[in-house]
Image 1 (cartoon, rainbow, N blue to C red):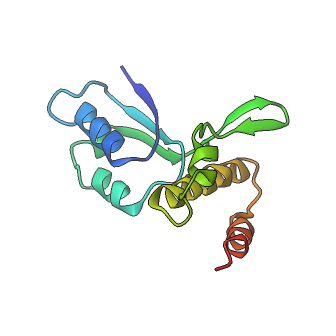
Image 2 (cartoon, rainbow, N blue to C red):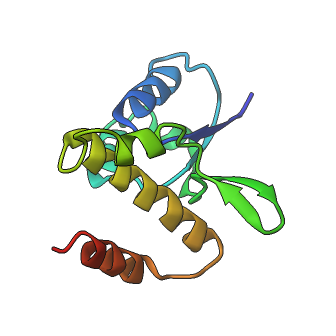
Length: 133
């Protein structure tokens, strides 16, 4: 039987995928892997270096889908703690603040990529202006 994997590109998810597909008797005959956003070179190399898994991969693609469409003109990025992480007490210039901004930028850029609107650099420029960098 073949399998379709739709996963976020994290180290943990790639390790789990490789464990499913490696060895003499993998869980599935072929795997079609779709990542929800950009995959780092490190993770791609990890997959490429597992020679027992490579012939069992039918597709390996980035889908740019780090959002949920709620209707024909709206979407959410499912970041429930964003308001608290960005505007809570003493959060500016913290790791949580930076991580939240990074997550938001990644997820919003996948919306633009899905719409075939390539304005990531404009968004980042506006973000940098807003941060007074």
